Image (cartoon, rainbow, N blue to C red; front, side, top):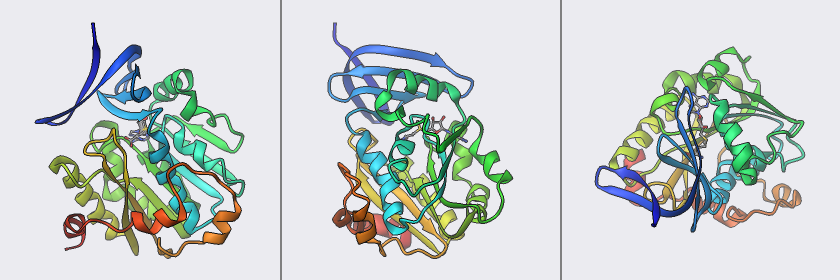
Length: 281
Ligand code: SAM
C-alpha cells in the first residue's frame, strides 16, 4: 500500500510526497512534531503538519539565510539565531572562523531533540563550543539583551501562527533593532509572494521592518518544498546596504556553497515586478 504525506498550501492547493516511513511523531507543549522518510526528499521534519526542513533541499534555505549577510559584513562576531531548531542555520554559521559566539533560542526543545536523533545532516553543529542553546521564547529573550550587543540576528521561525506569531510583531522588530550594533543586520524568514495568505504576511512584516530599519530589503530563493517554491528572506540593517558586498574577503574564507554564490547575491535582491509592486508601491 502506497503511503503519502500531504499538506495544504492553501484551501485549494495541496503538496504531496510519497513516503517510506513515518519515523517519529510527538505532540510537544508547542506543536505536533513529525519526521518522515521519503523517496524524493530524504528525511523531513514537519511541525503542525507543515514542511519545515528536508535532506534534499535544506541546503538552499540554509545557504540563503546565512551567507548573504556574511558577504555584506564578513566581520560578524556575535550572532543571535531565533528558532532554527533543526540546526541547519547554526551549521552554516560555524563555518565562519571569525564568528566568536552564537546564541540559539529555540522555544521547543523537543524539536531539537528529534532533529539530533533523526536529522544529523542539519543538527551536526549544535554541540559546537561557540554555540549556546536556549530553549525559550525568542520574543522574551530579546527583551533581556543589552543595546548594541549583536552583529547579526537571524530569525529562522515557523510561519506567523502559533509560537511563531510573536516573531512577526513590531515590538519584536524594535527589540531586534535595539540589540543590534551600528553595523548590525537582521535576516528573517519572510514568507512568500505567490499565494495570498503568505503574501499578506510578507507585506505586513515588511511594512513593520521598513518603518524601523533604514535598510529593509527582500531577497529570494527557489525552495521546491515550500508553498509555491518562491520563498523570500528579509535583510534589514541600520547602515549596511545589502548590495555592497565584500567579495574578496568572502572569497578568501574559501567556504564552499551549493546554492549561494557572489553572482547570485545581487540577483536574489532583484525581485519580480509583481513582488516589487506588493512591497514598494
Ligand atoms: N526553516 C523552517 C522554515 O523556514 O519554515 C523553520 C526552521 S525551524 C524548524 C523553526 C523553529 O522556530 C521551530 O523549531 C519552532 O519551534 C521555532 N519557534 C517558533 N516560534 C518561536 C519563538 N517564539 N521563539 C523561539 N523559537 C520559535
